[in-house]
Image 1: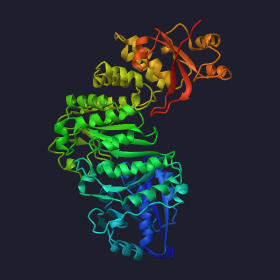
Image 2 (image 1 turned 30 degrees about the horizontal axis):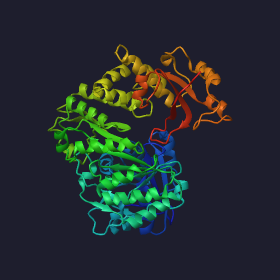
Image 3 (image 1 turned 180 degrees about the vertical axis):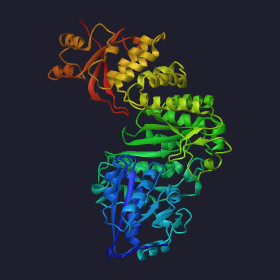
Image 4 (image 1 turned 45 degrees about the vertical axis):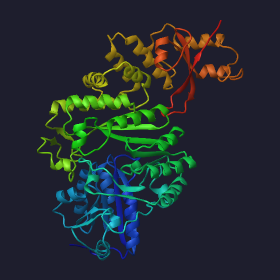
Length: 574
């Protein structure tokens, strides 16, 4: 039992500490914790403190060790638990009266690694379900070594609104706002901590609408719903979407969705949605049936593919699809098939994450029988298993890093569309490109868009369609808003500047829908013009009447997910 010396103050002072992966993130748990503590305790003063894992350690340590609080509450997660453990050791050493409480998914591990401290308390589970004993012990300064609580298993379940008006200026300014309309997950994936508890709790819709109204009063840039499967109840999900659409705020809403839980009314609604309002994160994980069965992820891969492809056709929702490298029964060949399968779905963003053997998950308990080797420290990334030796897994990891640099931006959409249309083996293409990245060191040094252009052209050197690929890369470069071409793309005799000067004399005084006579000079000055072959423009979805044809890249963004520059075909007559 931990007993506090109460000489410091009659007011109990507690700092609530979140150490986020980056500044734009926020720690939702701190706001729930603050509200519960202030509701259940008297004579309490709390302070929310948010830092990042990249903050200078000594500066962070000194900011926390200022002797202004009797208790520090840490939220421990896989990306910060090593740092939390280090801070615990140093903070307890410099302040002999300080007490620390650790919660979050990594709390138990932190407790094991810091077991020698008598002034450390571990809280496992949800603060909303904490027994009165915890708050009584805290108020009296007689904390035990550990406490446990489960919201989903409690008989009285209520999720209150975590935020206050002042939070949006003090703690959430220039950060994403995290919000949950439900807690729990309908799936029981063996690699996920959410599988440890059964059940899903949904807030009443009227409560959700009221809380969203309050959040939107503060005009956040991004609201990320942390519901593990937002559309597990399609009708409920649609009602929330409709509510947000009716308000039409200048806010991006992020949802984690299951691709096989869509209904026709949902598709009909999403078809009419304006670009820039919603973003979907879609967990595919694998397309290998044996793998999906083993990890207990009951997903219809064909239906998932149809859903993503259907959503992509509208080009109004950013689609982020996930694959996991290192799952059971996923071989080199089946993972390549998963990559090609997800490419065929054409999401905007492909995230290829490494499997993490999280303590407390089923897959961690099965690790030895499946030959898993993983890092001993958080976040416990897998290094090899029965199906992928270390060399193969390393090669696939670099493939994923190559995808991250080349695909998960808006640089080359026309090129990727072309390669897919000709039946390219995308896994093989990026495996080869990744070797080039590795040899030239671009996995550990920055690669600009210009550098990516060079690497892609080098990779495609010697292909019979090299000239076409170069044209498509040039087209994509100009759609990104660049006004000049890099040397590798200056393959035409008529340079961009020369072509613009020539058009000053040849373009008509006005063009309906583009410019008036008074706007002509500025239109030509701010636009970029380039000639492309008929074949290249067909790949870009255009229907030119001449070969080559003149394309104007207008200095104005289109209304779409990528927000590329608008384009138009120019018909010039002498």
